[in-house]
Length: 290
Ligand SMILES: Nc1nc(=O)c2c([nH]1)NC[C@@H]1CN(c3ccc(C(=O)N[C@@H](CCC(=O)O)C(=O)O)cc3)C=[N+]21
Image 1 (cartoon, rainbow, N blue to C red):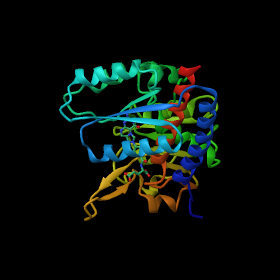
Image 2: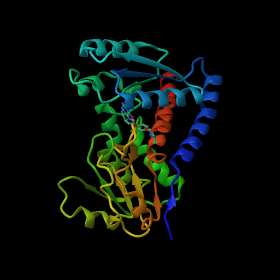
Image 3: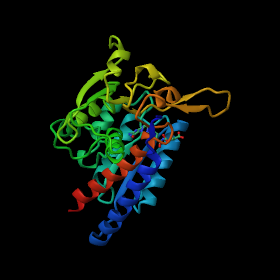
């Protein structure tokens, strides 16, 4: 039996409509509208698309979105002073600085400058720490999106083996911790580029999360029959067309013949990341306006 396709676009839409109702209620009960400030430095085409999608999603949910576009030559001090201004701005509830930043800017320094109560990406060390302790203020958007995909598709994680491939600060590390936490209760392995016999490790997974950024590196033979396969990768590969083609970290067609559930790329985890960003913006607004 072929895998059940987990439709991230549809699940994200469902979450966004739930959020829109909560936003409307928030606006009725408070003299404020949830507001996200997005900061984009430079002209990277993919970043422009993502930021525009975030803005549109905000507005569709009834929130305010403010975009700050800075030139690629922006200095670190200029960016830090914009962040200081947004930290103080009572109308702004969430701040997102789109990554990657140009090379003259120290990203770590910038992410630490965002006030933790407005850090809707949950990248600030204080928010990473709170999440690690199981007392999150915000959950990081992509791992949270993955958990929602699993839950809303009826994939059981409790007592199951999960393997996360990739150890990034943004996806792999938090994903591993969250899957192991109370409520999700998986037994989790974190695999990476130095893992010996990655295929054998992956084949143990009832839930396999691929977050490495290598096109189609997870092949069909690496998947346990019936597993839930969540593909976080978004890789643009050359297919002869000017725009190229988006593929995940999973070789989709072969994986779909073995897996029990699978997320497509596009239309899987990507749209969920944006939905969870809106969720965090509403949470930030509720905490600040209270
Ligand atoms: N501070 C910060 N926070 C982020 O959350 C952040 C970031 N920087 N920098 C870049 C990455 C990437 N990211 C995506 C969000 C949505 C889609 C998405 O909606 N993708 C669509 C397709 C989009 C397309 O066609 O290119 C999909 O998968 O269906 C993709 C990627 C957020 N990021």
